[in-house]
Image (tube, rainbow, N blue to C red; front, side, top):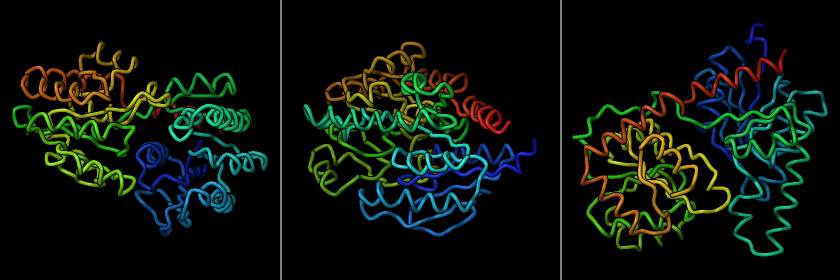
Length: 369
C-alpha cells in the first residue's frame, strides 16, 4: 500500500499546532511513514505547511462556552472539506463531530489523553454536583467511544476503562522522542538548579515548589505559562520566589538547555484521581535528559523509582520533604549522576516514542486494510 494515497486528518480545539503528542509525535511519525497528514487547530492563525504537515487554522474561541458549543462545528466543516481516509481527534468536546464523520462512513479514531470524569474541573465539586457531572460525562463519552472505529488511550489505566466499551482500544503512551532532550553536559558541570517544565497549576504543585526553595539556596527554573495573573501573583508573594528563574513558555531547544544545567526535575502533582494513575510527559522527558526526578509518591511512580532507581518520591503537598529531596540531590552528586544514568537507560529500553509509534503504524494499517 502506498501511504501517500491515504489522507489523514488530525483535529483538536484546545491544543496548539505545535503540541508535542499530536504534532511532534503522531503527525510527524505518520508523515515519516508516508501518509498525507493534515492537522486542524483552533488557534486563530492561518493555514501553513510545517515540516510537511498541512495545518489548517480556524478561529480561536473567545471563551470555554464557544470552545465547547461552537468551535466543534467549525472544525467539522473544515474536516469534511478535507475528505480524509482516517480522522483522528483528541478532545471530548469533539465527540459529536467525530460521530457525524463516523455516520457519514468515515474511519474515526478518538485519542483519549485524560480520564474525563476524573479531571480536576469535575473533582473539585462536592457531593451530588460532582456525582452528576461524573455520571453525565462518563455516559456521554462512553456513548461515543462505542461507535468509533478505534480508540487510543494515553495511559494503561485509561485503556482499561475503554477496553470494556470498545474492543478496538489501543494504549499508546506519551513517551519522549528518544534523542530530542538527551543531555550533553557532564554531571560535574550542573548548576545549583532544579527545573519544572509544563503547564503551571496549583494542583501540579507550583506553590509547594516555591515554598521548598525557602529552605536553601537552590534555584528553580520554571518553563511554562501561568494560567492566570492571580496564581502567578500568589506564587510571587512567597519568599521562595527570589530563587525562581521564570522562563515563561519555552521552545524545545530552551527546555533542553534548562534540563542540561539542572540537577533534577520536579513533578509534584497532587493526589487527585486523574493524577495518581497518570504518566506525565515531563516525568519521562526528565528521564530522557538523564535527570533524577523528584516526584509525587503515587504507587505507579514509586514502582518506576523502585525498579530503575531514577529519583526520589515525596509527599507533593509537603514543602519540607521537597526541600529535603533537593538537598539530597545537591549534596550527593555521585548518587544523582547514577540516578540520571539509570533514568536514561529506562527511557532507552522502554519509555520512548520509537516503541509507541510502531503501535500507531500498526493501527492505521489495520484500519485501512
